[in-house]
Length: 249
Image 1 (cartoon, rainbow, N blue to C red):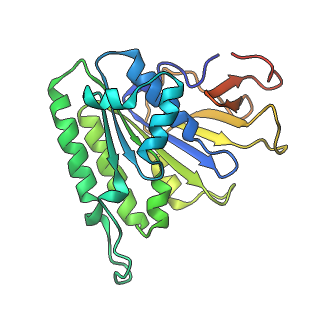
Image 2: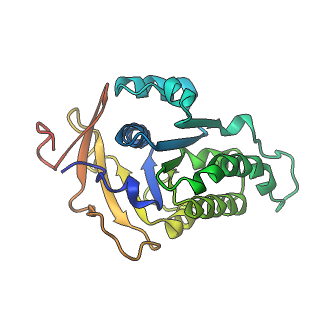
């Protein structure tokens, strides 16, 4: 068994990734990026980066033999530094919405995706790497729910796959932002630390759940009871079934 399932990226739906401080899920974003750009010469990816700098994306991609700079020059990859373009109004009145400040990101993404609508053969992936940082910076739940709903609708118009990563800070408590994102999602990848604590051979566990939006699932799901374990290495992640950390599936 490979994780994530190869057909997940071609679902052209919203894929939510939730993770925790003890088990960050950024390795999945880099895995998705590499897989997507390598699988088809007509693939494109737009990264809406909030927490990771371009140089880190570039360095990690290089470990999987992906040249990000070349992908940008070939117009297969667009990298958007979100915080370089938007900042919340720190001294705004209570109940004032900052959602208009996120409009430049939406408009920029729209300008990138619009030409795709007439190119049916292109497989497009949009990654929002860390929406929780925007919440920490002062964007309200209203701001972020409107923004993510707009992103999802925009991606649906051009049949692009949208991946959004969201942190769970106080596990097992589920906050309102994660609940909202789950209601928009077709699939939910859950990245969790081991319940038994740290292990040198195992970094954490991943599950794949069905989201409320998906009516006709055609991708094998992974329940918590059957969670796939993983170990992080210098070149990425190795996945295996519980109790088989010496093997690779």
